[in-house]
Length: 90
Image (cartoon, rainbow, N blue to C red; front, side, top):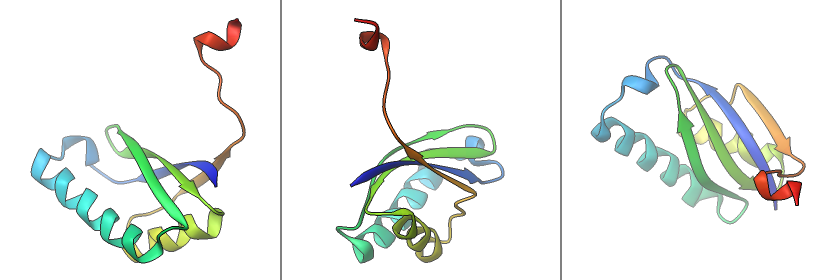
């Protein structure tokens, strides 16, 4: 499976409380259950009006299908080609 970063424009998402975030996660999980095993959600970074979600998927179409089923936008989908971190420096 390939790794993707999905940028979602969701106004006010950074102000959501724990109950609202739980509801969003449940909505996403319900969509993922319908698409398994073609797409998996790893985690998301929440900012003021955006989320940056990390997914594993067979292809970009699986990500788009998840967005369609869940009702969450997928404004930008970017395939991750490699990972670097402090240990990359050797």
